[in-house]
Length: 486
Image 1 (cartoon, rainbow, N blue to C red):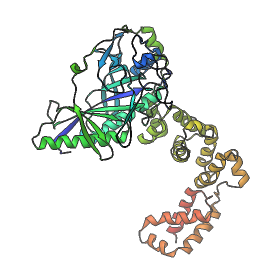
Image 2 (cartoon, rainbow, N blue to C red):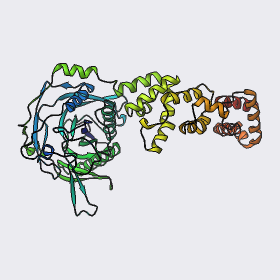
Image 3 (cartoon, helix red, strand yellow):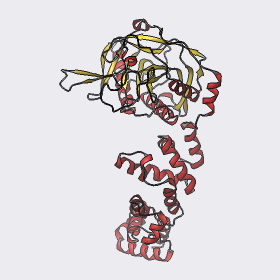
Image 4 (cartoon, rainbow, N blue to C red):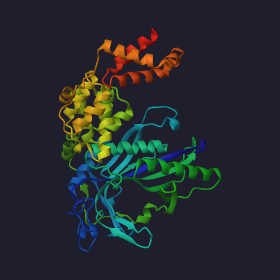
């Protein structure tokens, strides 16, 4: 973007709540069922059908509100938002009106130093989080001749989290989405599946002259369902608006969609104002009144929040931010890591295995940590053997770990049975180092001439000669001494 302009971004994030039933009826809240099989007169909006509020959805909204330190409203109301789409069977959506169940919270994210001029966390305000129902889903034939509507999703509970226009770059918007994703998954109120649409966002973005106080004309980019699409769509839209302003053309207030196939946003319609939706109070639902005792019950049951857990790991184990965030990807993954770290006595070692071989195995199998065949205590034993230098990392990775996955027994029993214990006999390593130096006079001469990077080659040759069972740190020490005296 032209350096004379800056972006102003606010995200409206739609979180599908992980309740057993829909928002206002007893239909099952699930994915993968036959089209239009999870419907009833209430979610189809048939005459005479009356909505009944899902108490579990209310509890989940309270959980989110307390986690973001929002103000829980003692009384809030439901309204009808009128619009006419084929996948909205009632012709209106039941949502919360002027006052939401949660008002004025916040999330802290890493700031983008490229736009803020300094590093450090940035507090992003959350204006409100309100309960509403989802619409159905339209499916279009590849040839564009026919469209089909599946109403299984109609009436599924949503929590819309409306962020203030405090974000200043696509990177910050992506980080905000990731933080919110970790939070709602960690709280157990959403499964976090962006591919299934469980968490998606609309981005409100405008561009203004750098340092100017008024906001520019706001454009809404709809239905972004991946972190990558958030960054790409905002990058394109910000550049598009800045180019228009530079040409002296006004930006039109409108709704646009992201076309990932061509990497562009496309105009869909002019942006509706609130009056266009013809809001009025939902006559079939009373006001939602929250008892203070219920708030305290939910507060006492809150788990440790993902961002607090991340900070604790960084302080206790010296982990980097990206590492800690990856380990907090789900409560189950985080709990597994924590057990391995405690049992092995090495947080860094546990993190390396969890983000390395364990994650690679899960990706290959298309499974989550819940389906991983090793108990955390079993992996902790392997980590401990490596960290205490009883077992070489290469041997552990290439031989023990696969054998354990195949049900071959514990790490120690396999190591003993196969004779894989690490060799830390200094005299044995000195012999192998001498042989490697004698066989590689060229690299030795280059190292003595100052090309230190070739040391790694000689270390690798020595480890290979020791069949991967040598103590790598001792090999490096012996090699350095041998080269100094060569």
